[in-house]
Image 1: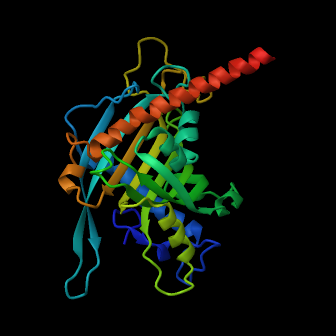
Image 2: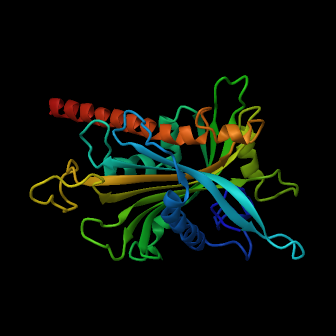
Image 3: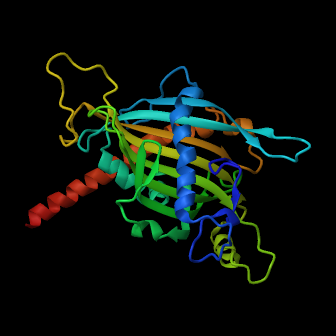
Length: 346
């Protein structure tokens, strides 16, 4: 049974945490993260090319980058009884990719630092700031252990070293309009973010570094046994979930990596490939890849959830590009005004 899948996992599958007793079968956090990365790498490498691309690129203003949207099915083999043998489960996945000029000055662009600050750090909290439907984020658990790991011992998967881990379990509530017709959706998401760097970059101008964020769905049933270690968590969840809320699920992977310019080089001397050059270097681009599968639950038909025209997941993931860029530009301007004010006071 894979970790990165639409079907949610029980809380008993969570990695070891000081607030949860666990048992002999409970994985430690490092093992859990490594297993997650072992699944995430092939998905990120394969999905953009194996899903069916839309016939045209999409716009998501104010982003200058066009968005390539792909959609399709992933088949999982789930074990059944020995008599029946394995049976395939299918998940509908949506993928988007966009190449952004690495700049913290030009309109409609975003720098690698701004991506780190907005998407890797405090991922769920920042999502609530730029996504109108996200109305509540409650942190249920945080794993402090990764911050104590020796940075000289990253987790290595394939050709990549991963470190600087941020790991938490969140309850995320989305509220939609009209509220009288669409009930709120509550998601319990295990979220892990980490930086990565290639052990053997192919060329200097393609260094193979960036960061990844993985979200895995979980769910918790009401504890039956008095004194269960999950009673406190269940109470927190039920206190935070709005009335009429439907529990829904999604899995997602996001990756931002430095890439070569997607446009042909201009005539003349070759552009510098030094990664320490200013962020406005036009030859430095950031590829933002996002993969997701989701189930809204309730009475919303699955075909509606998959529809671009009716505002389903494909349109939502494209809109997220513009929402994030608009929020980033606003924060950039706020920082500039604050710096100007400090210089004036000085």
